[in-house]
Image (cartoon, rainbow over all chains, first blue to last red; front, side, top):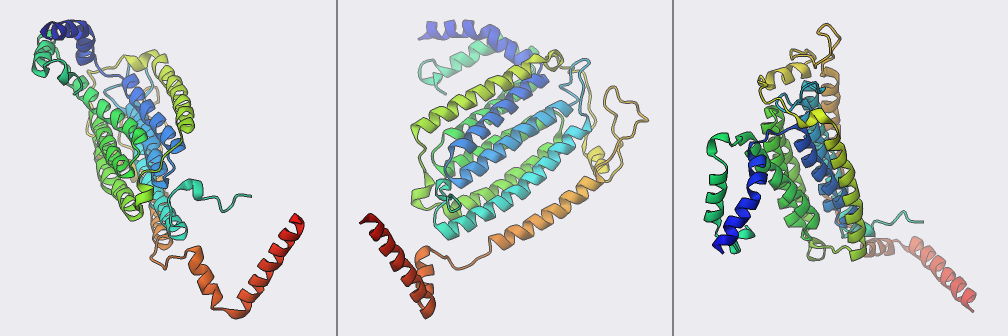
Length: 130
Length: 244
């Protein structure tokens, strides 16, 4: 067991050292934003609970926000790379505010649907189906 | 967590600490890795969880970790707003929605395996495209860690009032016209007011109307229900006549 631990730590040493002392760039943040965005899209497509779809929307907006903040950050900007400056942070703020408004309205619609149909399954929302 | 069953965890930590001297550890990177791992893992957990209450909990964790990422990127005001508005407001609203609709059949609504497979394939393709785009541009991979940033709260507040006091972006002359954000700020404030009034109107308390209660209410009105019954019986007669 001990030899396994040492062997694993030897194998992981270059990777771990590279992770812990390499500086973080915009690309790192873009990876996080991509994962959040993809999770949100899959969540929106997959969940049948209306609140699950709402949570997917929140994840998508948050992934976009990560990208905005990364591009506006003074710490992550590479040499010669364009930066959004303060505009990125302001856009992120507006996205947060509009997400709050969107969540309020979507939640009201969901509650209304629940009151009328006694379910939150969006597959049952087929009253307009021809 | 998974390796603790196989490998003694203190031994692994000691090995990592021996391999990486504490002086060269870039704590910015370590904290970034921590917050990024929590954010991504909880975002994936939101997708994989079946229970809607657990989904809400994972979403809270993911958004809070994202606020940590904002702090690390030097956007402390956006990070604070993320914590206060998103985690403290929007998600509390969502959790209230979950609690109001959490009847037993709807807590875990299953998705079919075919849909899961399809969504997984589409998600993997989308992720591949996005990651390729993220690593394509060379300057995005080489950060300038020597930069020193001033606190951004005051410039943001001034920009919301329509006055820009921050440094212009690289390559933009100082004298160029740089607009503030007074008009979008006003539009968003009125928009929030209208939206919240509308949401309160939509979600106001009223009597639940199921199809049965609608029929019961209609049956108390005599002529309407007789007309409806007549139409229904004639329709069924037509159907049965067509079947014959």
